[in-house]
Structures are given as structure tokens and as C-alpha cells.
Amino acid sequence: MAGPGVRLVQRMSSTRAFAKVAPHVIPVLDRTVHRLTRGRFLLSAQMLPGVILTSTGARSGLPRRTPLACMPEEDGKSWILVGSNFGRAAHPAWTHNLLAHPDASISWKGRDIPVTAQLLEGQERSATWTALLAFWPPYATYQARVNREIRLFRLTRVGG
Image (tube, rainbow, N blue to C red; front, side, top):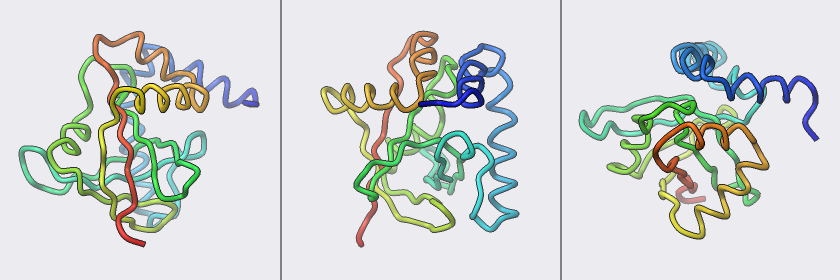
């Protein structure tokens, strides 16, 4: 059961004002804190688990580091990323990167882990979406706000 602090953050994160401000503030804070703590800490992960995704730019071919909330799966070898873009109209750039170059890496709890990304579709996406809404209900508000299907990716650890 979510405590009052979590419920307050969920309500705030569902607002249009949050969608306008958060994309400019949260990633910068997360990257800075992550760098200063040598990968051991993400500020946003105090409410939701988070990773730093390193993907290859779809057009540039350059490495792109993006702090993202995630839903770790019970197997301990995969993570779900949600392309909600804080409920904004366009798909986030990192989703285009993963579609073009599914091999990536994440920083998870201070460890760099090579992963492969898979766009979820059909029944697999539907079942995962249901689990995500139980995990973080504001995703429903984000989906209702946009005229696109929010992309879901499963990142699976490569190797051992």
C-alpha cells in the first residue's frame, strides 16, 4: 500500500505542470547525482526504481545517457522501461534509439549491465501495461493525455 508521500508524488506527477517542468529538471538532477555518487544513487529512484540507460543515438550513432524510471521484473535479469515522456505528445528520443539500436547498457544500483531491448506489443504489452498501472498509477493519466500508444520496452541482461 502506498504511503501518503508516494500518493502525493503520484498526484503531482499526473499534472500538466509537472509534464512541462519535470523533463527539464529531473534528468539533469539525476545525471548529476549519479555522477557525483559514482553510480550508487539516483535522486528520482527514491520514489521509483531507476536506471541510467546508455543507448546509441538513432541518427547520430553517439552514446546517449538517459536517467529513467523502470519496473524491475522478478527474474532479476530484466527491466521494463516506459516511454511516457511525462505524458507529453511525442515519443521520447531514447525510444527511437532503442528501436534503431536495441543493444544498450544500464547502470543499475551502481553496476553497468549490458542489455538488449525489445519493444513489447500485443498481449505481452497489454499484460505488462496492467502490471505497470498497479506499480505506478500515473501512467494511466499519461496515456489518456497523449494521442499515441506509450512504448514499453523489456531490457534483458546479456550473458550471465
